[in-house]
Image 1 (cartoon, rainbow, N blue to C red):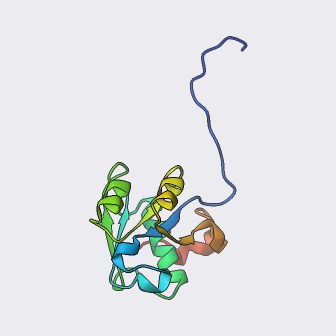
Image 2 (cartoon, rainbow, N blue to C red):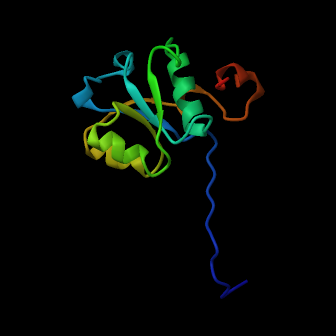
Length: 129
């Protein structure tokens, strides 16, 4: 295979790499400030939607009543967070580094909750709508 053109590079994580970040300008200092806020995800039923719902449930919030989950597509999530169209967003690499440079608040990593995206005992965290 020496000299063959590279078609792609794949990387794997042993835990989900989605993190909930919030805007300080929205009054967010920690996860307790998320109630009533708009959270950007890529789409309803997506892995970012699952991550948002799982994080909210983990902290005792009802995802359908305590926050507004806003589907914006992959290209729309970070710009909406930067503009302030939403208060928080589920981000993935390389968005973490940019969010932290901009002073956004890292509230919760899905991976740090011991959650797997395909673990059968996590079914209760999957969105039902």
